Image 1 (spheres, rainbow, N blue to C red):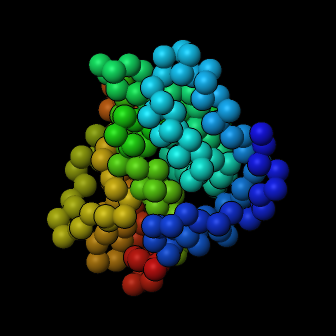
Image 2 (image 1 turned 90 degrees about the horizontal axis):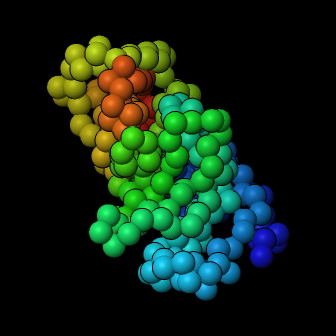
Length: 220
């Protein structure tokens, strides 16, 4: 049944940074979402373990129906966060879709067996250790883009020459294949997911946000 009573103004889930909470509640929109527990018996009948259905339902309860501004990479990320039918096996593990793409893509967005948020391209590639990390990264990109004096995009092999000496990883984004780094007056986002998942090193990209003050570097 559709959740038609929900306000279009989302309430951020617990556990996010203040910056990410503001991003979700100010820039996000909550749209009516479909409950997926009604599919429980049908999915069980198709051999999907109950624990995997419960995992997808928990994602839907936390994130389902949330539309966020486009990401600066991956053609904007999922249009609306929404859990789909789990797929996989006991041998390879179970994953489920995290939401439909905004444009036609060579991959989809998935939640992996360990809860990581990633892309299912030529191979499964975990971008962040959780959906919280993905949302934190979106929030940080929006914040940095708003406050930076310069934004530089570096592509392909040139990314490997970036000197991150003196930078520290930004822990809240829970980076795996993709990471964020905080320096003295700049933030660096490294987008490696397409390069790894599609075996396409030319897709490697970094965004350098320069000229940031203390608020620009952290933003709460």
